[in-house]
Length: 170
Image 1 (cartoon, rainbow, N blue to C red):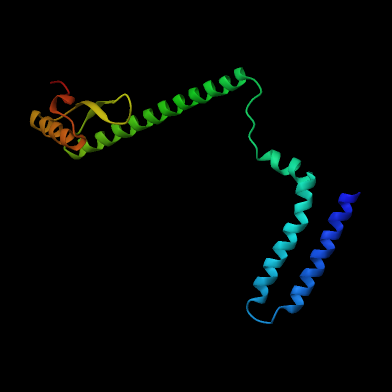
Image 2 (cartoon, rainbow, N blue to C red):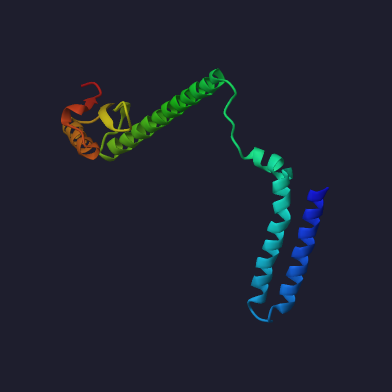
């Protein structure tokens, strides 16, 4: 009961002081700003007893606190599931990247004069998306195949033995 009396007394005192300060404010451009600051002060003063009393602590703050699982086995299970999901996502991203590279190489070969492309394979490095090897089977003359090989070698920064262009039927 004494706590409730203290809260009511504090609220009454804050309202009286705010009213006195409001009457003492001169008219002008700063008056709305000062009223806003005083309003925030009143609001903080009203919420302070509630926070100290524990009414808002239990309801609001518990939603923001992330608690680890109770036992270690549950924690390890969540960790394993997270790692598995990460591997699945990385594999899907890698497959998507390989498909985009194959499509890009196909368009480059068409732009270089290869008309019929039957197969394109791309090998990527283990750790990331660095192209290690390109092999393609397409139509065209031997000179066109060499020109495509030289272009892809320079374009992807590979050595000549890492880019193989095989001709259909040849």
